[in-house]
Length: 195
Image 1 (cartoon, rainbow, N blue to C red):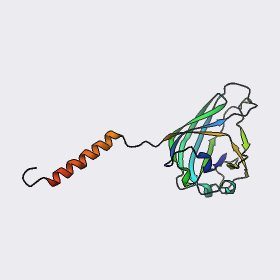
Image 2: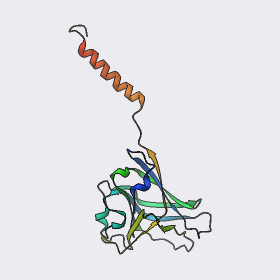
Image 3: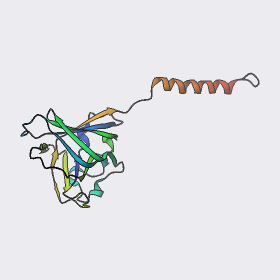
Image 4: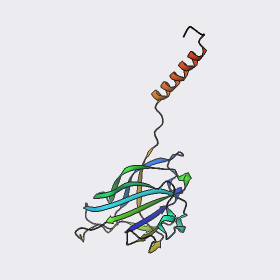
């Protein structure tokens, strides 16, 4: 399958003004789930994030039209093993994604390239709901190679994004650059023959 979900930028008001790196994504399990843990594997999946020019309720059915200029593969393609604990499924990203809400809404793009494997009737259901403040929407198709989505709605998977701040240059590095600049200034001002 292919699945795209958009998140309104205003939902990320806690992110620093310069942006932050998204390092992990977690999806909540539906309240009907009664087993405390689940373990299962998707043989081949790819997850991408981008800043999208699309508005929340204006996702195109053409998947390519929703992608932004910073479309980045953050996981896969490859095998993904799930272990659920505490009511959610967590995915640590292979590559962090620098997201700045000032640049637009966030788009999650999931491609399940191979979903084969033994059927497990006890696989958990993820929590999806309509946002009362209209902060999410989705488009999807049951075929991963589809160019056009076969369905769209205002539902969204309950999602948590773990972030970390963009590192600032260390004071040691700044002192080093400052020392080099000061030394260059002194060298340039030394009288000829004394340097």
